[in-house]
Image 1 (tube, rainbow, N blue to C red):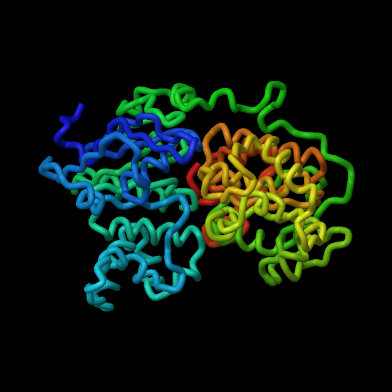
Image 2 (image 1 turned 45 degrees about the vertical axis):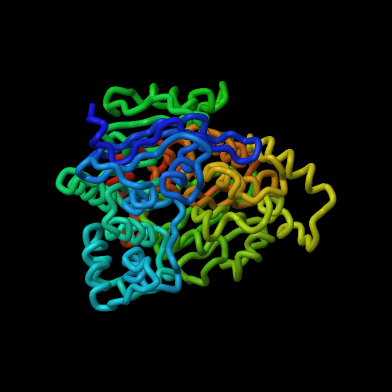
Length: 497
């Protein structure tokens, strides 16, 4: 156990309430210099609230926070917070600025700072080059708004590394990285922790990654610390899940994980590319695996977001290519984006508007219907979403619960096709199991599901077959359920198993 003087941050008895809702009820948390520390807990456990308080973006109601420098000397809270950087689950980049400008922005926090363009580009290249030198060489002058989610994630991590922070908090940082990029990031973090004394807090719901990177773990449940600074190797996966309070949320009794369903009768959807044809009968769950280039091309074509001639479809009443997402939705092709922050959740509108959005489009409604309150309430109950009011804003909910709002838009809406882009990104194990079951239920009703995930394990659990793309965006193979394995997908895609 480290001596107290070696902790870069120490939290004792932290409490926080929002109105009548108590979020933190006495959390203890400490991170030693030079360690990689996993912070674990289900959605709504209080992890994000604690991080916001540590970084100063939210005020605590009670408890203590101490910051210490490399020599173990106590720092003032304001000074200590300047040594902490967060890479959030939802990216916080400025789309109109270039990659280089976004990376060096924290260096120019003072209004009196003089921007040195040439030096800034060099600093940005050094930081981004630690993660991906080829990407750094060709992207520094590109606007961030032109990047994919995966590329933006690398930029935000580079910005954190460039800031000179003593403590970096990473919230699901590998969600859209390839296997090689993930290993490069982990290797970099280990080296910075070992050689530079950097402290890393790693928030993830991926057990395999937690064990790859984290020495120590702390588990928070219902606003309290239930495991405080325990060696990750001393806890089994089952023990961790149990401490998080997630065991009871697994698939209902009688549901066989990954079991084949009897496909409803009806016309198959045919998806074509040059040299490739996939026929998907009603009720099929097609997994899509691989880095963004290939999956994004297919998804954009299926939901009318791009006019690429690479893909075409054959389905009764549908054109070969949709002209717009609106046309796709009105003809029964739904879409749930994986970028809930920028493209998914309508943050300025209340929960009810978020839930009812797809129904209004498919029904051609211009005005909210009088029965919507009851309908929305029933949908939220079915998804086990707890909200104080239907008129609250989505930001009052945890990230995993916001993801449920996106699913809620299409729950019960008659759809011939539902395209899912990373629907479980950043959600806890219990919520994942609920989402898996909801998707199985949709498929059982006849909806064809196309599901892109960077977690190979969940594709194996849910899908009937998987189309795999390599890192260049080319189709590397279509694998039926009987032949699916994590290692096979990793070989074809280059993504972590």
